Picture 1 (cartoon, rainbow, N blue to C red):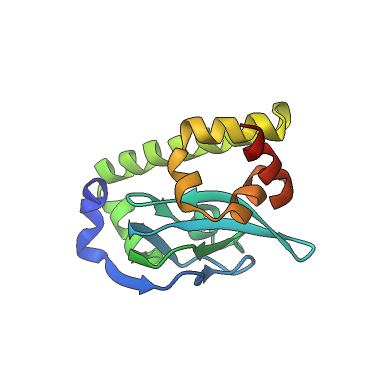
Picture 2: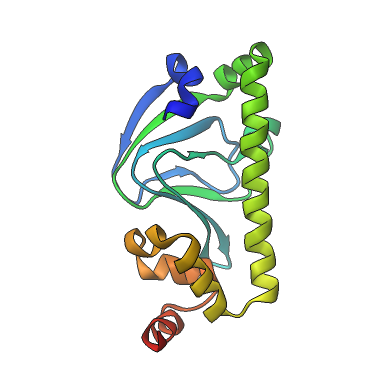
Length: 172
């Protein structure tokens, strides 16, 4: 949380149990979440099936940033996977900080750029790698995900069924 200390006077603490929906796809995001403890995921609904798009852990910030900054409906939902302790900041407070503190704005731009690069890497991995390769990449780069996240969410994130993920894991 040290990297977000400039926001701390504006934070409100929120404790939520596992499986709490913090933002529903299609709603406008009015809150940004900073994870002090726990795990969140983002996901989309595809014909009644939820597809996990990303996982977030301690020290990460999460919001539907495109919605948060433009007041457009969110493209995805945000949900807790574990009991979480979150620090939250309102859209208005965040906007005021960004407008009045240029150093924070630069830090945020760097953070958003890092998130964009991560998203691009995941996107291209889906295009060029098979599920086995995507799983190996996940194990190598983010072993904590495999340790903390239930298998069906990992399968959804990899774009495969839980049965296929079990087969991949058994081949290792």
